[in-house]
Image 1 (cartoon, rainbow, N blue to C red):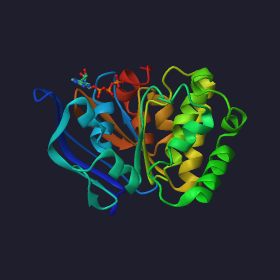
Image 2 (image 1 turned 180 degrees about the horizontal axis):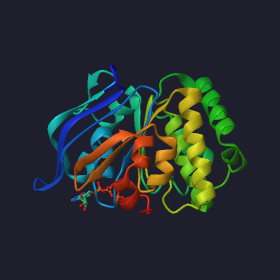
Image 3 (image 1 turned 90 degrees about the horizontal axis):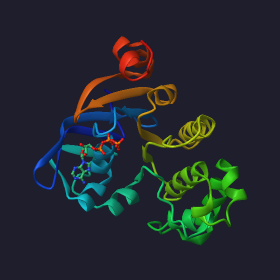
Image 4 (image 1 turned 60 degrees about the vertical axis):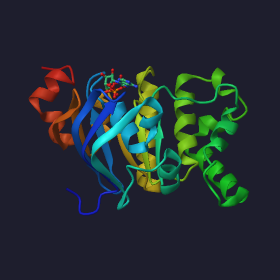
Length: 248
Ligand code: ATP
């Protein structure tokens, strides 16, 4: 384990609607400045894990009933989603979730809603987002609902960046996108990581892609971590190859 991880999830249990036990003791860590992949099949509990961390679980009648979550050295498992965003931890939801009736630029600006550092700083960061995502600059005046899936994914990540995060919880960025666009998005993730020091916890069903960009991975099966290790060793593991990489 890293000496001072940005995120530490310790043995959490999650129950929906007071009865449905979905996470059965999940532990994981993200080192400062790391990209960590959270892998597993549909329904394994990846989204639930991210929402437990970002506190978005409560909106879905889910509860963390055991264990603890520490972000940047502080217990955060009783905080609101807004509190987490203010502390620098933000989730990008699966399925993008841009406001379809707002322009790309308006969407990006909504990402700054928790900030108190004034307009000039926000404009500067908007410019930085356009540097990172030239496509968003081109499409700044387009209604998000009329842009492509890849552009909407970029918009969702760009909006998260506007909150000045230390860490992004990124849920299935590759979903429904062509391989070339997926590659483009993962390159941007790597860029944000190396140039701005943003840490990532990346939930993905695209194991192959995730393990090319992450340095470490955890594999979830029905609410438990069944395997974890450095990305390289997971890529070489025979079970991972057979069950998750589609090569035997
Ligand atoms: P996906 O790729 O579909 O997002 P996942 O690995 O992220 O899969 P989760 O979405 O976390 O998995 O779902 C884990 C389990 O929890 C599933 O069995 C799912 O049916 C159940 N679940 C998810 N949300 C709820 C909810 N709001 N109420 C009850 N059960 C839920």
